[in-house]
Image (cartoon, rainbow, N blue to C red; front, side, top):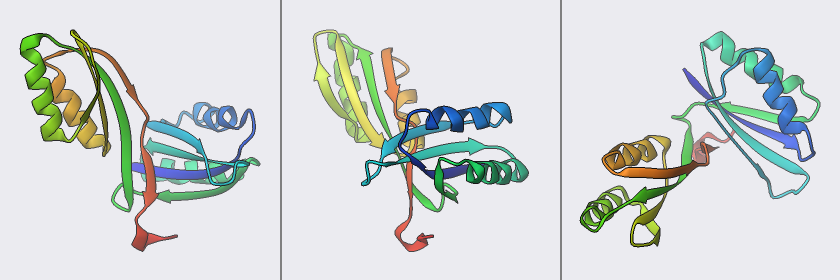
Length: 161
């Protein structure tokens, strides 16, 4: 079972280390972690995706709420939220494989953002599942480098908590 935690924290040095240390000490798994400033530069939002049984997921929420640097914790499932992940992928290509890569990008609604004679850089912003489908479709090509943001999520408009 997966759970998404939207954790508002004070934007100070060491806060990420404290939160990650909580997961490490208690052997909780972090599937994905993305951190960024909010509209208030004194506050950051950590989007943490974790998996485990119901008891573990409840324990994570309780432990996060105990941290002094944590302002607010919201939890929600993947169904209750809009999820996106950004992917940048550098793919080796030849003259013959370039057309196939372009077609895959068109089908998956990915964008080619840079190109040379032997490399193509692809950008995709979509659900984590669709990002993985794109990567699976590109496996026949030589993937040189990948950068992924991890999941970003907000609750759906009708589910404001």
